Image (cartoon, rainbow, N blue to C red):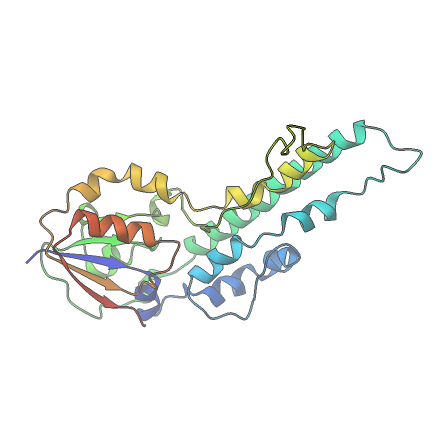
Length: 258
């Protein structure tokens, strides 16, 4: 019987690694405190990791826009050129916000000490793994070869790009109204720039699946799928659907708690 193990953050937590939602906040508190005006973040939350990713999808772009927009169009000193300056300023601040979150996340993952973990179970010879974690716990603690482990969202210790984010979508007003007239205003481009953090921090699940299509196609001989420590959240649901399509006859077992 050939097994595939699907490994989530609960696996690392079970091994005593500080990879929890609340532990990320403890590491990134200074930065996250600055973002509370724009995100629904709870620094005391001890929920699953997907709660952080969900919070990224609750970006209040209008508050971000208003925070940086100090233009008074009724003022005698108003000039249209101020609007272009506003767009440039919001673009710069949006880039800074996104890169700040990404860099802080990378630094946190890079600082996790895997050496404190010990083996807690035995994996059968020849098993394959797909891990949603950024750590190399499987390789370092269990001696699993890299060829048998797919880090679907990247691996920190080999400097992969780390994939994380939300799965939400945003309603966009059409360019033209029902009468065929433009909905644009002089501030439309600046407002568009304010929405950048929402789109930049969407998890590119479709692209990740396409990139790893060959791997999913190679799973036809898998007879059992064992899920360890994954919350089976909505954001990652497309991955599980793809697994089910690749192995329609495989038996599923899940161990979610840690």
